[in-house]
Image 1 (cartoon, rainbow, N blue to C red):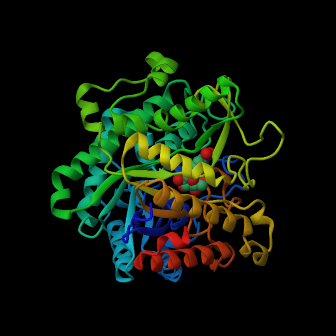
Image 2 (cartoon, rainbow, N blue to C red):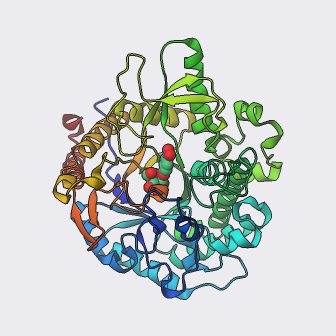
Image 3 (cartoon, helix red, strand yellow):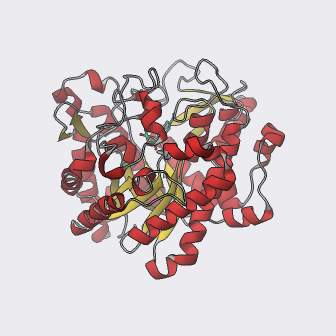
Length: 484
Ligand code: PNW
């Protein structure tokens, strides 16, 4: 164990996404995305907020880079807005040189500060025109080609400088929250109180399938035309939280495995990508509603991701039963049988701290899929932070505790368990537009005063900067065990 060497090239960073931070939604020829329209519909975001201004990062990107620099990170994960590159989205639609220039400048400015760009091609902001034209992600023939074309343009424009690509952020959220529960754009659902159109029993599975295929096609384009000359890596990032049985009832033990299989192996599409098939449990649950891959498609999908992009936030206790297909017919809780809570409650109902789960999940994923892991998102929203004074919000004790626990868990997974973790990106660099929560839920390690757009590092940001510094120094002197 003491011989285990930690990677000297480990990437520390923070993550953001285009629609959550950029604002300037009509600047320089950008076309609207499905989130522009969706967030404007009354009742779709908690506080009525939309992305028109967000954290104004389209104009303030240099400030953001200075902030990254002050935190001492090696890398920055951000996403490209498809509708800035191709305002109408399609393969025969015009390309917007101004959009390309903006990202190109951002990349140059990062590299000038020694910060490695880690780029997501799709973080949920589908060009609205593609949704209107042919149903967006529901239309396999069209969307797969349009996405592959968009990806090619990005590889061409930025691949000389970008060596880390993520095709998609969280297919589970795209499919289930966008087309099943209807919480996220485009908000389709069988629930007619929520949406005039949609079928939650079929559409999420069609969308998930098409997202995987689009990802696989983009990887093919990269490998065939760019990888050899540009020398980068490409993968996908999937969300998934750890599941534990509620108690020692065998039904709940089995259900916890099911929840894991469904939430991690199946619903968010790890098994097709890494193992080459949908798992048995998912086929049984969905029958003919699950689209089939042709032999040619599965050959493309299998092994398409070169590393494991891991977005994870929490752990759930699992109880057998219920009719929620999106949870693999199990129920989730944070309340243990004795009434105590698993961890500290965040502002959003779905999130509590539980570092042991983070370590267990890393072990599970590494053993099952055998790929190096990048933690591409991990973070916490302090309860009621939006209602506090700025001074109070900056003393974000619960977020510090969350990161401290997870840092210890990650180091134990690397050093003691031998999991190959290549990087860690905290979510998020800044408080920002938190989708259906609007601006009410704050995930930043930096406080944003939305009146002035001024940025203020929270204690958690300073804490992570210190941890990173200490660990980097220890790694350099290979004195790792002292820290762990
Ligand atoms: C991720 N859930 O989304 C996204 O990648 C980010 O854009 C987002 O801001 C962040 O997590 C925090 O929410 C999720 O309901 C959204 O379990 C919802 C869930 C999980 C992740």
